Structure formats: structure tokens, C-alpha cells
Amino acid sequence: MVWATIERHILVFHNHWINTQTKRFLIHYLPLIIVTLYCFGFYTIVIFFPSCENEFDYTQNWCDYPCYSNDNNLLMYENLFHFLLPIPLIVIINILLIIRIAKQKQRLHQSMHWSKYRKMILQIISCSAVYLLFDLPMLSLLVAHNFGLPYEATGQVELFFYFLAYFINIFMPFVFLGSLPEIWIKIQRKIPCFTIRVRPENITLRPMTMKQFTFAQ
Image (cartoon, rainbow, N blue to C red; front, side, top):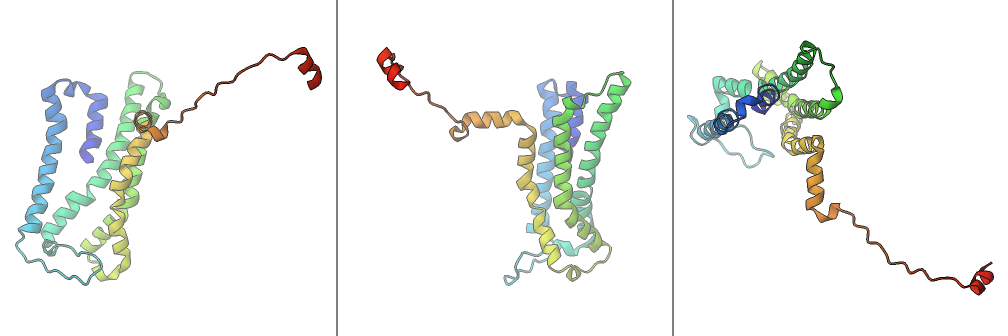
């Protein structure tokens, strides 16, 4: 998600960087491939090939952390680069994008029509709000644990915050759909239940005679 926010800067201010197939691969696809392979490789090694032995307790309500979390250096690295840094970076980079657009308009002596950027601003604010709302509580606990807060001190609150972070993956598609109305139009065209069809009825008009008209009066 951090790279997606950085790539938004490229699309707005440096779209010539992706005007060829080679540049598009280097700027768009290659970073996604590297991030995916890194995450897959990191957690494959630390979970399935750890230097310690995992202990399984099937009486607990939820799975505890793998044994590599007992390594303070490795745990600090994971918390810092996988959880703590990405969230503020997403928020800061999104805010900088809005500031950068306003500065460019000011430098070119152009008036800032916020209505043109309403869709982008709405998407930026929504993405940042979802990450802050559902991920910040757990990140706060991670920071507190790294500074010496005992794990048993939080009780069920930590369990609630842990599963709260999973709502990011649930709500994020709806955030993008809400900021892209043209996708809703395509969905309505593809799914018949969204389309309401009104069938016209045939109405036959018969001429009224003078006798019927007098009787009706």
C-alpha cells in the first residue's frame, strides 16, 4: 500500500515514466513483484524454518505469535518495517500529494478547483482513515510492548485489537468502489438485479359516442 501511494505521485506528476511497456514494468510491476516475493520469503523462513521450535497449545482461543517473536531483534525489525512505518508513511505521502498539487497550481498561477480533485481527495482521506482506524490501536500496543509493557497487562483488549486489523482488507475494496462511480455503473450493467426495467403497457383508446358522453355527464 505504501508503494501504491508513491505511485500515485508518479501518475499525477511523472506520467511519462510509464509511457512505454518497459518503463511500466520497471515502475509498476517490478516493485509489486519484489514486495510480494520479499513478504512471502520472509515469513516462509521465520515461520517454517525458524531457529527455534514452535509450541502448539490447542486449548487457547487464538493462535499465539510464532517462536521467532522471542527474538527481540527480529521482532523489532518486523514491527518497525512491517507495521509501524507503513501506516504513517501512507498518511504522510497522501497528504503531501494534496499539498504538492496545490503548490503546483500556485506556482503556475492557476486557481485550485477542488471539485476536480474531489474524487482523489476522497479516496486519499478514506484510505488513510481506514488504516488509522483499524490498524493504529494494534500498532500502539506493539510500541507499548516494545517499551516493556507486559503482554498479560492488556488482557482481552489485545485480542480485540488484533482481529480489528483484519477489517482493513474487508473495507478497503469498498473504499475504492465508493470513490470510483464509473465502476458502479459497470456493475449495474453487468448484474441484472441492479437494473430496473419498466415494461410499457398497451392502452387501447376507444372513441366515445355522443350518447355515452351525455350519460357520463
